Amino acid sequence: MNKLLSSPDRIAIALGALAALLILGALGFEYLDGLPPCEICMWQRYPHVAAIVVGLGGGLMLRLGVLQRELAKPVAILTALLIAASGAIAIYHAGIEWKLWAGPSHCTGSAFHATGPIDFNAPIVMCDQAAWRLFGLSLAGYNAIISLGAAMFGLVLVTKSRKTP
Image (tube, rainbow, N blue to C red; front, side):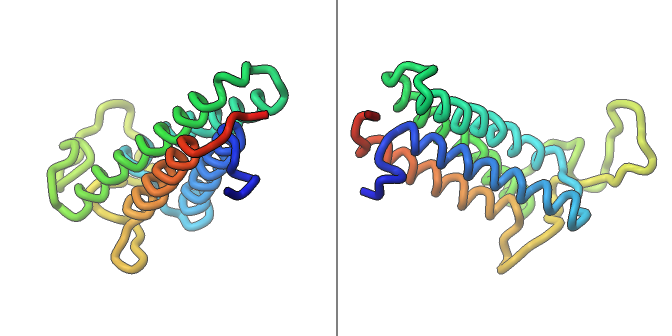
């Protein structure tokens, strides 16, 4: 096995770094390409942010000896599960975009229900309309593939990993 991914703390760090790259990609689409996120897009970001904290933070604390070595596998597994949670939300979102199932009524369909102060300069972003597609897949679709694939790969590596030195 590659030395880089041979121990749970390194796996956690790698997964945390992937989550950071996915968040940076989402922010790039938002701020550089002008594609504001819908509500479900934001839901997908929360587990990634948690995976950054747990994976990078926990992994680095393990490497520095701040956390006990027995926590290495749980930290790596939790990081993978957080990334998988984002992937699961992304599947839900992609299904809404493909009209396979209904989404929340306040961000799908033709009706828009304001729940607070209205900012008339803010764009209304509907959850059932993909703002961007490549090869037929939306950003939610790509997040689902990348997140679930990385989570499964990380969990397989953790189960095969040796104890952290």
